[in-house]
Image (cartoon, rainbow, N blue to C red):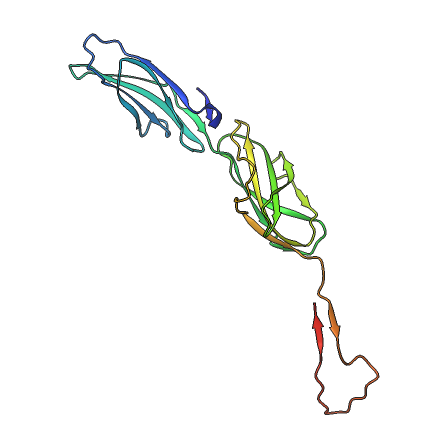
Length: 219
């Protein structure tokens, strides 16, 4: 094993133990995600020969290892395992839209950040958006290079945005569903307020010291 992704899970573990005085059901299989510093029991009370599956938990940048331990009637322990640890990547990359939170520009650049990509390179990432209050997400842009400039032209409105991503191992976050919340909300508003003055329009006479209210409407 070199690198393990979500596509490779579960991993098949096979073993065979030879000992004339092997204790019944004395074989166990342990797994590690930190290169063997700590071990977690996968299953014990196993026969001398067999196979089982390891469903790798969600992890980013883990160092996987597997060992098989057996004990004979005299208490002697036999041990076999992976020669070296292997990289475990079962979580997709994570990107976060940052802003702007609002804009008056017809075309603007979306700022974003690669929050985590683990040890595998980013393959591509997709921007999704929808208007606030709606349920359907629209695929807006696919990019392949981290830091690639993303320019958008949107109609006036309030939007939710999020990214999905895929790494070169094939770990990917699927498209958002109607219940998936947005990561960022932003407002696009290129329409200036419409101000109307209702008096002081002209043709009227005013005297010094005279008070006159100013009437206006804003839409």
